[in-house]
Amino acid sequence: MAAAYDGVAKWFHWITVGLMAVALPFGFVIKYVKDDPKMAFYAIHESAGLLILFVAIARLLWRLRNPPPPHPADLPRPMRVAATAVHHSLYGAMILQPILGFLMTNAWGFPMRDATAFLGVINQPAFMAQNVPLAEALQAAHTVLGYGIALLLVAHVAAVVLHQAVRKDGTLLRMV
Image 1: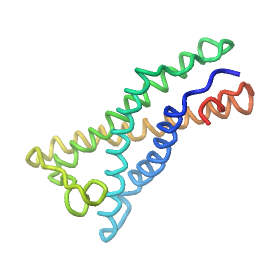
Image 2: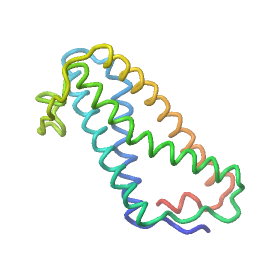
Image 3: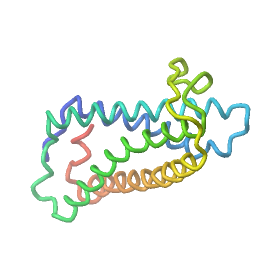
């Protein structure tokens, strides 16, 4: 069996899973929510998104000082390349997506304040004037990247199932 990730890396991974399990569904359904609870959905989605950003940065810093274990020696090269590409894409997306969202809310003229304050209590400063064309472009990018993240997560989970159920190589146990 391949070497396992260290305990801190495992915590970062599972905290990220929990935050993604909140941010993604809330992000996908916000446009369908009626006016009354809509601000609560935004508050939860935006707070989870910023937490993902902070955790991803901390996770990357940890990873730089504590490299992950190598892939199993018998892992075919195409699977190695695919795993690396998906992981790097997820890291990039976990940093870029919250930044796009944060910039977008400011460009729409709705910084994370009051009803949508970070974690419900921390008002964020407005750092730009409302700019609808910029907001629309950022929203389009945020939406496309959101679907991209969903696809990357499907690929990631499919690979876990492949390793656990088909290859039976113990890869899943590296992160649990």
